[in-house]
Structure formats: structure tokens, C-alpha cells
Image (tube, rainbow, N blue to C red; front, side, top):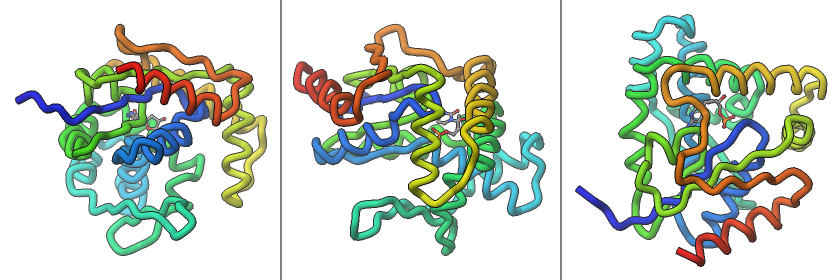
Length: 224
Ligand code: DC
């Protein structure tokens, strides 16, 4: 069945700014937001808490299928993420959770388990979906596909500032190494690797402010 609810897919590597841009674009358009990375992060977190090794594909896929999660926001608009009845917002954003997410995201059965959950976010009036495979796998007929990138050094700097603002302390050198490892794993995995869709518009945000990137995306939306 074809649906007319528009999807704006924003894919790209860690620290490209896509999370912030996706949120701003969704707010500006009054659209729903899918932070697909959070689903992989929550899967890793939930598995870790249940004592399940992240390489136990079948057990982790079961966790992904059964995830009991809720996305919420505080009065100031900042995010709040719940795993069952526990607020896990900070834990979800930790680098260790990101690394776990990248590991479980390479398991085909986990990606399959999360597919329909992601597609269910496509509700009127529209959706901005942020991730690695939004334009290639989850929403291949998205109205607009953007591949947002930036130089590795700039991505590490941005991530560093973002984590510091959340009160999470991590060294820039460690973060640069983490980003490099994660980029490689996300790009080289056999299932749904991080790669631009053939019909994606590439946006290199190196040296651009979040405002400028958001404005460019909104201009592209207006051209649809
Ligand atoms: O965007 P993020 O940092 O929250 O993503 C965490 C990890 O999840 C990332 O390293 C790769 C994986 N991921 C994915 O494989 N597919 C997506 N659509 C989103 C995230």
C-alpha cells in the first residue's frame, strides 16, 4: 500500500549533527520525529542490563522485539527517554551505549526486529527520520533523502561539546577514536551499511552552523 504521509530521511555518520537538525526540521514543519539510533541504543542498554552478551544474536533480537520504550520531552523541549518505567535519558546518550548500539546494529535479526517499529512512526502530517539507513532501507520512498556529513575532526568536536553540555565527561582523543571505530563498523557491516541512497542529496556541514544546515534542509523541503 502506498502512503502519502511524507518522510524526510536524514542519514549520516556519528556527530554529523543530524540528530539536532532532524529535531529542528521536525519542529519547524510540525512533523513527528524518529531517532532510530535511540532504538539501537535502547536495545543495547536493555540487553546489557539483562546480562545478555551483545553477540548473542537471537537473544538480542528478542530484546529488540520486546522493547518497552517511550519518548517524551521536558517542558524546555529537551528529550526524555523511558525504558519500561525508568528514565534512561542520560544512559542512552553515553558513548558506551553508542558503542553497544553499533554492535547490535550489525545483527540482521535485530534490524529486522526494529523495522516495523520504525515504520510505525510514519504518521500524519509527516515524519523526519534520522539514522543510517532511513533512505536506503526503512523509508526507501521518502520524499526527500539527505546524507549529512562533516569532517571526522569536526564531528568529534561537536560530539564532545554535546556530551559536555549533558554533563557527560569524555576526552576528545578517546571520542575521535570511538567515532573512527564506529564509522568503520557502521559502514562496513554487511546489512544496511551506512551509505547514501542513490537518490540522496549530500550535505557536507563542515564549517556550517546548525542554523545554516537546518535552513538548507527546509529550503529543500520547500522545493518538493
Ligand atoms: O545515531 P546514533 O549515534 O544514536 O546511533 C547509534 C548506533 O546505532 C550507530 O553507531 C549505528 C546504529 N544505527 C544504525 O545502525 N541504524 C540506524 N538507523 C541508526 C543507528
